[in-house]
Image (cartoon, rainbow, N blue to C red; front, side):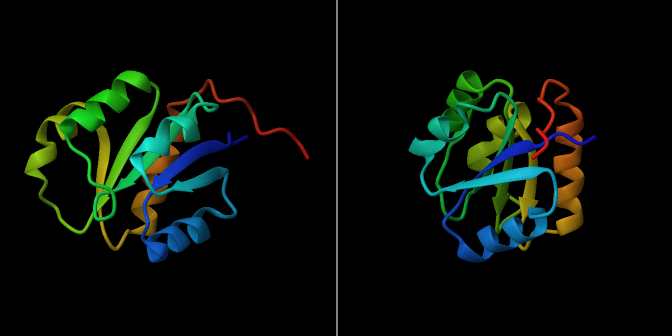
Length: 131
């Protein structure tokens, strides 16, 4: 039985938001979209195991932001999404705190592979309750 995993998507890119929601609609992933870094802690405060996907083309972050998030949310996996392969301003975060980096347009198979891998690392997730 697959566990439902909570995903927070930090983006204002409507096309990206729609494509991720469409891809994950029938799978055991629940997506919450927020548009600012400040709302992140609240968005995942109720979910011990969460994945945060940050769209760097919409939300500027630096090493310090990622380090602070990692400190406050140690069980959280961070995936960054960008139009570019190269992010020298995030070198430290990529080495120490980022689970994966993805380039737009997202490859649906790659995203599913990453999310299923994260889901498999989170055995503490409670089972999805029958409805």
